[in-house]
Length: 93
Image 1 (spheres, rainbow, N blue to C red):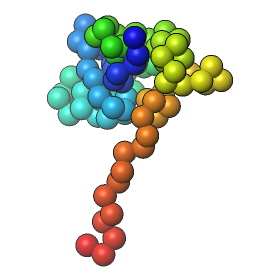
Image 2: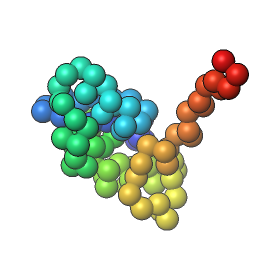
Image 3: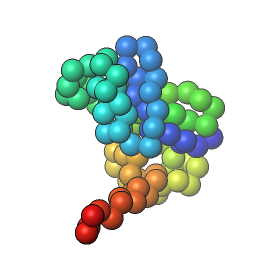
Image 4: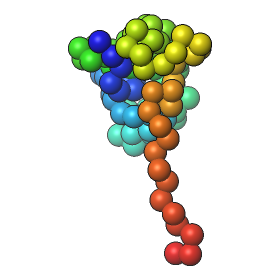
Protein backbone atom coordinates (compact mmCIF):
# COMPACT_ATOMS: atom_id res chain seq x y z
CA UNK A 1 0.00 0.00 0.00
CA UNK A 2 1.18 3.57 -0.69
CA UNK A 3 -0.13 7.14 -0.89
CA UNK A 4 -1.35 8.05 -4.39
CA UNK A 5 -3.05 11.46 -4.10
CA UNK A 6 -3.74 14.42 -1.87
CA UNK A 7 -7.39 14.59 -0.82
CA UNK A 8 -9.97 16.61 1.04
CA UNK A 9 -13.04 15.00 2.54
CA UNK A 10 -15.68 17.74 2.63
CA UNK A 11 -19.33 17.09 3.53
CA UNK A 12 -19.06 13.44 2.55
CA UNK A 13 -17.42 14.13 -0.83
CA UNK A 14 -13.79 13.22 -1.47
CA UNK A 15 -11.89 15.64 -3.72
CA UNK A 16 -8.46 14.62 -4.98
CA UNK A 17 -5.46 16.26 -6.61
CA UNK A 18 -1.73 16.79 -6.30
CA UNK A 19 -1.83 19.67 -3.78
CA UNK A 20 -4.30 20.44 -1.00
CA UNK A 21 -4.26 24.12 -1.94
CA UNK A 22 -5.28 23.30 -5.51
CA UNK A 23 -8.11 21.10 -4.27
CA UNK A 24 -9.37 23.87 -1.97
CA UNK A 25 -9.21 26.34 -4.87
CA UNK A 26 -11.33 23.97 -6.97
CA UNK A 27 -13.91 23.52 -4.20
CA UNK A 28 -14.21 27.31 -3.93
CA UNK A 29 -14.51 27.58 -7.74
CA UNK A 30 -17.33 25.04 -7.68
CA UNK A 31 -19.19 27.32 -5.26
CA UNK A 32 -19.30 24.74 -2.50
CA UNK A 33 -17.64 27.13 -0.03
CA UNK A 34 -17.13 30.87 -0.08
CA UNK A 35 -13.63 31.04 1.38
CA UNK A 36 -10.76 28.57 1.74
CA UNK A 37 -10.69 29.13 5.52
CA UNK A 38 -13.82 26.98 5.85
CA UNK A 39 -11.77 23.85 5.14
CA UNK A 40 -9.62 23.00 8.12
CA UNK A 41 -6.80 20.54 8.71
CA UNK A 42 -9.20 17.80 9.88
CA UNK A 43 -10.67 17.56 6.38
CA UNK A 44 -7.27 17.30 4.68
CA UNK A 45 -5.66 13.94 4.02
CA UNK A 46 -4.62 11.55 1.28
CA UNK A 47 -5.86 8.66 -0.83
CA UNK A 48 -4.02 5.37 -0.40
CA UNK A 49 -3.54 2.84 -3.19
CA UNK A 50 -6.65 0.89 -2.19
CA UNK A 51 -8.75 4.03 -2.80
CA UNK A 52 -9.47 4.99 0.81
CA UNK A 53 -9.24 8.45 2.35
CA UNK A 54 -6.81 8.61 5.28
CA UNK A 55 -5.90 11.55 7.50
CA UNK A 56 -2.38 12.98 7.49
CA UNK A 57 -1.12 10.99 10.47
CA UNK A 58 -2.22 7.62 9.05
CA UNK A 59 -0.99 8.65 5.59
CA UNK A 60 2.44 9.39 7.11
CA UNK A 61 2.59 5.87 8.54
CA UNK A 62 1.65 4.37 5.16
CA UNK A 63 4.17 6.55 3.30
CA UNK A 64 6.97 5.50 5.67
CA UNK A 65 6.11 1.80 5.28
CA UNK A 66 6.02 2.23 1.48
CA UNK A 67 9.41 3.97 1.43
CA UNK A 68 7.88 7.19 0.10
CA UNK A 69 9.30 9.27 2.97
CA UNK A 70 11.73 8.67 5.83
CA UNK A 71 10.64 8.36 9.47
CA UNK A 72 12.21 11.77 10.20
CA UNK A 73 9.31 13.50 8.43
CA UNK A 74 6.81 15.16 10.70
CA UNK A 75 3.36 16.05 9.45
CA UNK A 76 2.86 14.73 5.92
CA UNK A 77 2.33 17.27 3.13
CA UNK A 78 1.83 16.58 -0.56
CA UNK A 79 5.12 18.38 -1.25
CA UNK A 80 6.86 15.61 0.72
CA UNK A 81 5.64 13.01 -1.77
CA UNK A 82 5.70 14.77 -5.13
CA UNK A 83 8.16 17.35 -6.41
CA UNK A 84 7.11 20.91 -7.06
CA UNK A 85 5.17 21.40 -10.23
CA UNK A 86 7.06 23.41 -12.86
CA UNK A 87 5.86 26.95 -13.28
CA UNK A 88 5.56 28.46 -16.75
CA UNK A 89 8.17 31.04 -17.72
CA UNK A 90 6.19 34.19 -18.44
CA UNK A 91 9.14 36.58 -18.68
CA UNK A 92 9.20 38.70 -21.83
CA UNK A 93 5.64 37.93 -22.81
